[in-house]
Length: 106
Image (cartoon, rainbow, N blue to C red; front, side):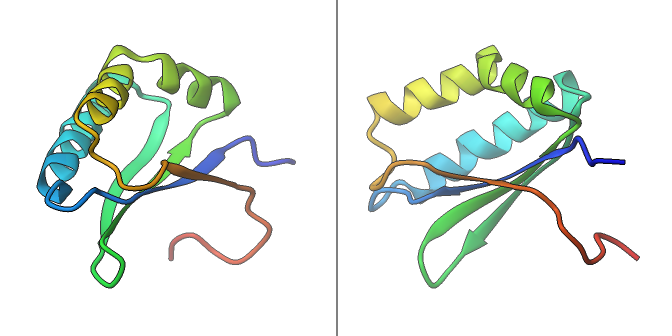
């Protein structure tokens, strides 16, 4: 049976001096997602010190859930604030991943 989950890696590169602001917005968004979007199975923020990138690891129940997430008010607000405040030094990088093998947990 095919896996219908949608897995996303979102890479955000904060502009100089903006990391704390971006991190705060994303952590607040993660709480909203957890509280209001049950089909979002994973929404986990990481920091890559060497590059200064914030990385969101996301997992959605299916494509419809992913598409719905992008339309949510909280997500749209974060995107708007990011543009208005010029929070990123590079465009948001999204990677959609399809699992092909290995294991996820023990």
